[in-house]
Length: 175
Ligand SMILES: [Zn+2]
Image (cartoon, rainbow, N blue to C red):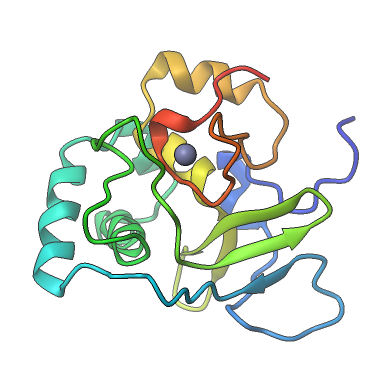
């Protein structure tokens, strides 16, 4: 046993986590999901979001189809990621030498602040999971994915020590 799994982000159970909404109040929510609206967030325009998501679409691993109910849902996740980062940043195919700051939702718990994202798996179903787990599931190579699958079902640790960074290249592949 790995202990209590507060936000189980095993891809196989991504859609079984309790639904939580941004800013939703509720004492029985173990994890408090909040909006991370930073003043210095300069987002992409709609056209730029479309452009970068189209580029990422070409890099999506085939395993992603098992996580999302439709192509539309997969594309929505890419756009959600594009919306919540700085307009010049690219966590998938961008530079490896700088962090990609996440301006979307986050969770605060005993381990600190973690970048979070709401996934929609159906009409009314929303599930919060960790951005770096989604990015790995959608984009990582088979080799990296196999390594990361062996780690605890928690947010992956970032090599840069910035858990609000979502740069794929900064994810720690070892425990
Ligand atoms: Zn980083």
